[in-house]
Length: 152
Ligand code: IDP
Ligand code: MG
Image (cartoon, rainbow, N blue to C red; front, side, top):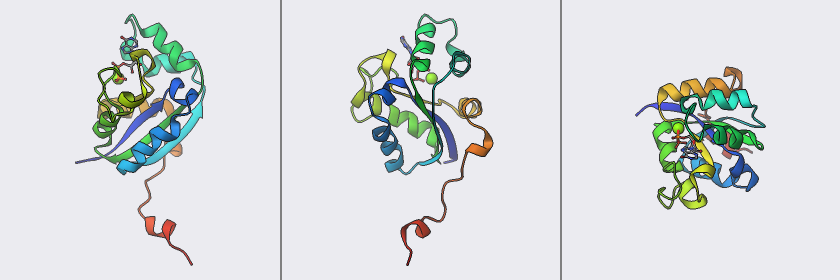
């Protein structure tokens, strides 16, 4: 078990369809913490950098267009084994194969509009977090929850 940070994107379809709250609620209810979050329109250069491993594949152009077509929400999610755990919550790449109960399995229809990105390994998470966030934009998870619940 390792405390990990992972890069999550609520892609353009998730934001346009009003599913950001639904998606974030799933991560939060599992006990993961939001360590960073921003809404932005992505430029082509950043989209290509993020998806560099897919450069040259037939779907690459459409993928970059999808990511840059409308605002997205980028997050760093933190918790125990968060990289693998968030991938499990997101579900298989093709929503038609994603388990019911996963985000893609519950809200997606096609691979070209699959709502969410999650880093697939510690190396990817490190690389991707660096693309989307400055270190100063990432916050430690609260260790003092009691003080946010109780006051007089
Ligand atoms: P992942 O998001 O589950 O890690 P990857 O294989 O890394 O899946 O692919 C990155 C993204 O590229 C997918 O989430 C999806 O948006 C898109 N994608 C992958 N394969 C296809 C395809 O065959 N057609 C259209 N889009 C695809
Ligand atoms: Mg991937």
